[in-house]
Length: 501
Image 1 (cartoon, rainbow, N blue to C red):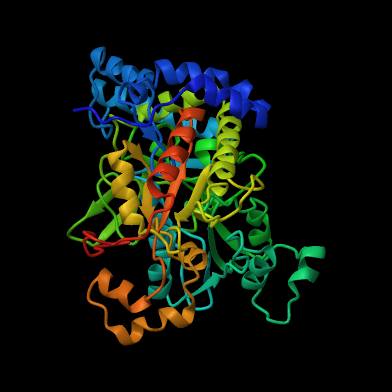
Image 2: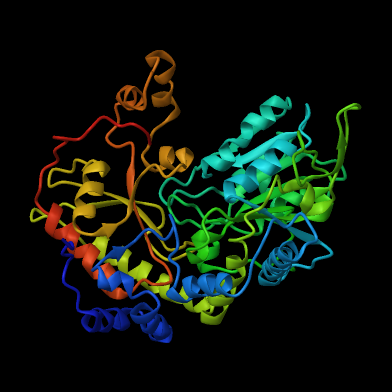
């Protein structure tokens, strides 16, 4: 039986939104696409609010995929037979299309296809020339795919330095703290450095890794930090996974050494295909810890010798996903046809509308229903809104309860800590002194970990908007929150123990 969602009058929703955000009218093409290419949402009366988790693919993308297989045969690229050449040509076309989308020169950058953005991060981490004296600098606001790099750094006797989130009101990392972390000498004044930049350092100081956009709060960290870190002698690994669905990255102006991308987050399909966009000079400094089929020109057994392939070939282990990689070209053509600026305008308007509506919610006694994490306005933020719901006495509703009840209402959102413990600790005010209890708790499960923390909340609710979002989605979600939780009292009855974050 089809679930019954909240009734939605799209015309009424648009009129109210246009009064507040008149520029929303310029994105009307997306309403047309919602009715045609993304009609599956309304056919199932589904409110999709998890674009930071995964983008949605248009029907046209699926059609293009099917058409490709109707008219050709493709084989493993590592050969010169006709099916192999056919696959190789489409993979090469996808590489060129990615570089074109990023305005990157093929003489300067190359594209390495990976299973996902995490795979791209791992390639850098396992191959980076860690040594004593080299540092890994991470923002506290980082996905675990970047936090995990500290294990590689530790194995290479390199120190990991975290840049704290000292702006706890908006859950932002301050630039002065970035400069302090990148500066080896404690006597260096961050403000003095900002006034007068240092010349580039010839000896590499290490790796600086941070997200262009937080997957937890939607905060956009300055892209100017790329040059800032490079001026301090660091290579830069930029996590663009949450940023690219609503923004463009111009690698002819910005010059990060490495960029990690997950394509399904941008346009829904293909899954299992990400990429590492790497500067060739930086790639030359990496050293693979092993070799595999496809990554070597030759290897011998009688003598333990091997010769690595050059550029991207030396980093694509085994057989790449040659049947799905051409869908990256289809997706980039699709998003370019619509215009990423059009998507960005729509998402910005709907995000502002969502924030205003949620923050205005209150119980009958006047107590606010929402506590939010991150910016309350549209300044330097993306389309991700993170919050918790408060009961009439000010207690936090367990996000697991919200996950279950929103699913029953046919709403797709995300709850938990979103694989970003640093932003979660800052947002939920879980201080180091609280975390220190874990050393004594001897936790054997995540539930033991949570019990040892003894804090009001260990997770949050995240809603995010994207290419197929409409004003009626916002209306339906706000109505759900108000009707379900207004004047209600917290209960954890029937909630299973926490298995993971």
